[in-house]
Image (cartoon, rainbow, N blue to C red; front, side, top):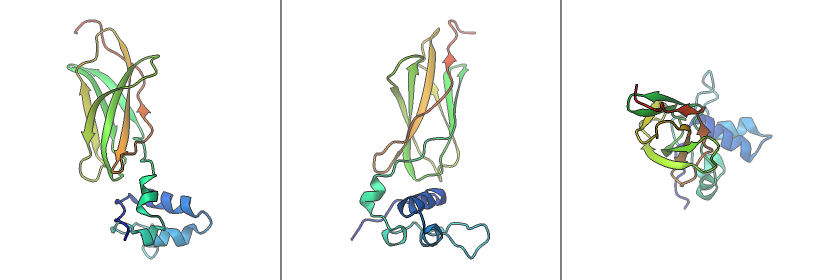
Length: 164
């Protein structure tokens, strides 16, 4: 027997179903937990099973999580504050990274655990940002299978050379 699939947001369930069999989308949306009898096609609350989605746990493990849609960074009193909104997906955590402008390699700074339904706001303050340097920050989501989304980057932010 297949292990149960992770709980996906309604948007992710629809994406998975349509991606697996484009051409019979309405049938798939219905079998993936969408309640077509209600207005607005609201998703049902139950997590989809392999029989409903048509995918196995192995196939689900290959899915890459959605990246945070927008990440911002600004200089704060104690360092650089990085903020983003959750994706609403059933991810496990986010990884916050930093790199100097023009650099290729990201330096992992923190792992932030998902809270609640993952639709709220998250923040991290980088107290180690070197003064007088310009950085870009990035955040990626990691799912229960260890797969990571693309990294959503901020615009560059420069730490002042001296404290204000």
